Image (cartoon, rainbow, N blue to C red):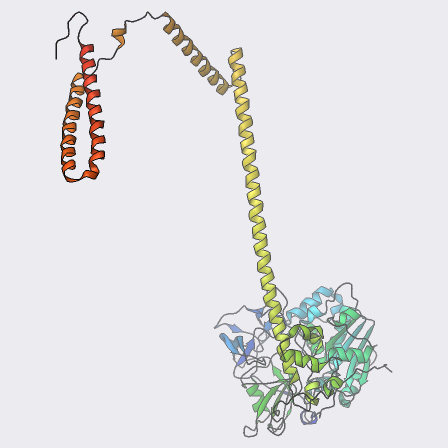
Length: 610
């Protein structure tokens, strides 16, 4: 018998599972419209590879992830692509996102498929590629791409492969009914994953409140080494970390992953999808969904095409509109209220609760914390919910993170037992969101700073390289000039040139030297010329004109002086200086004229009197 351990905390809410297990799984049928969101998994959203108006076949790939972490999206049936637009998608905020809307043609015509009869003859990478191309993501949690999860780090060998069939949350019976009716497919998918990982142990964990599923799975594993571990019913024993602790006694380290301790956990629905992807070449285009609640007459479990609006499922389950008070996607502990019934079923959707006001009443107003510590006792992660609540409410996010806020699995056990009706999980989600936002902003800031510093370093490096090149060019030019000068001097001295430029420089230098020698020789041999012959004859007419202008200006200035003396005594000195200056100018002009006349008279003649 498999040894079991226990985890701290946990609660026992009413199960309410019998309503949806009375009937076998039913086919939901083909709806009037299929709404296929492009992001149904963790990672990058898929990119559309079809156009509006295209006819698509069942199983045809309509969107794919070109780069990054993600899986493709396939058409759930044949039909025409009617629109590619924003539609409401499953999200606590009621947000909308890009979706491909397909109008089914009713033919349900398949695309070409290539199933594999013996996957052991293939390479492991080929099988992982088939799982990826089938668009399989985790169907029991956040939707982590299965092919990536099946590639653990090389330094972390998976020793224990766990198949999670606990399904601990109230109302949900999708995995229970899957194990009852598709046990062989579940085991086949587990074998494929075990062949890829090569673990030393494979175990399927099932809560003891599912006797029919336990019997079916035990029959399916006959002749294999797969263990069936029946665990006590306690919420949240279906949590990945809690189930690992129950079955192995090991604890996943804070901030770590199960692979860190040599364990991997997969979901029952994921195992069946892997089996169909390999043996039938069927991509993930449908899943098992529970439709329950007191507002529907025929609660049960349906196999639903991905993209089917919730309203179609409610109609199939016999919704009584007058009783409906609230729609919840998921379970009552970790699910969230839907704002509309037009949202589609996606790969991670496992339950829709159509609840009456008495079944899931609105929570009472929040009251002050009385420090009863019931939340701490119920926490399966052994955290301090009170302190986390206070820090989250006070926006002291660093302190909350220091108390391992991100180890919280948001199971809702603390909120369930709180006598003050404090929505503790909502505070934790808020704090996590703010921390993630701050990290994203810090990352953007760091990247911007790195880009700026890299740019500055690049500009500085380019400037240094430019300066170095300039110095090299200057040095090369100086060396070339010195070389040319030396060659020219040598050529001039020896009367020969080493090249054309040196020859030309030598010729120019020799010509200059010859010219200088010729000029000096001519100056020495030239006879002395008479002084009168070398003098330049003065312009007497111009000098007479200058004298007349000076005398006229002197006369004007003397008149102004007399007038100034009579009218304004303070300008007398200024005018007197001006008159004296002009008087000197007249005298110089008269003297220049006299000398000019003397020079123009021949030495043999007697100068005429004025």
